[in-house]
Image (cartoon, rainbow, N blue to C red; front, top):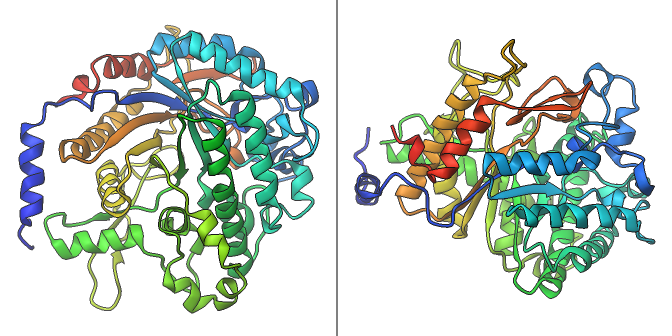
Length: 475
């Protein structure tokens, strides 16, 4: 094993001398998505989204669950804001349903939809909770999908128009904007693997065209937000494929983990869409990785020269969602080697392994590469939660999970990595896409039959973490 570098020694010294607290003004929040919590699928003029349509297709969603009611947040948001305040959240990340604002995806505004979000924002601000607004969290209007969805270049214009409508109405009060949540997933699972809406299975070339149209939409939206919201903070939230070095004291092993995180992998059987770089590289650095041109020359040859200029816009933060990583070591004949799963490895109900140390490595690698303040916009545990005989929800595993992950996030802070905030996924148990309502990620238990909310033990625990700004986590 190699010796720690001088830089690593400095990291260790900083960690020993830094008080166990998160940064001043660190934002503690919880996150949600419109399609997963709102319900009210046909209320007040809302148009159908691709997820409404997907839920109607037999066999697509576990147990035939739908988004029709979900957590009924559309009607119960005042109660949920009161619970956010009780937990002590600084911020609430939510997404806007595009088809609630523009039922056809473009054209005439549905004023009732805009008014709903206006009331929500006002309610948050009155409670002292900062709204973080995600413009797109997977629920494309079905009317735009019929016209090609993200395969249609015109969607970038439609997204820009949608952004203009939302910022014009809410930009006087909402200052924090996320253009897209996890484009790897809504493009990869929706256009390549076919397990998410709209359920397509396309070759790499078509999938990358959809990737590019998302990037172009982002590039067109950012200047509109800047113009409409003069003091705006803008970024994105990507899913993360994170390398974790099996031997963290070995520089070669760390480099292998860094390369898995920051370089695309091009193998015939590889899920190309899962790589991190297809979004931050063009958005921040104005280019696609060279491997794309080497393997899909028809893709780059077809791009107008102005597109990458348009996509590259100044951003205020780098947002990532982290749940688990891949344990890697260095290899002689390739950039990295992913190690097999350990027998009996701890796992969440979703089947994802526990890899808390990846929270540190994700923060380190993204900071080194992109030099922007970092937000963790999603992190949490799917567990088997129910209301016990004493009327409470005792989710001790979630508390243990979060303790481990947040300590690793603090490790990044102790080494001087600029952290802006942490958002738990999720505020509420909710519709978990193709898994329906079986998965429970929330700080708040939802009885879907009665819509009764119950704060879990983890919510009360997180209150203490927030109150102490992390000191409560100290070993």
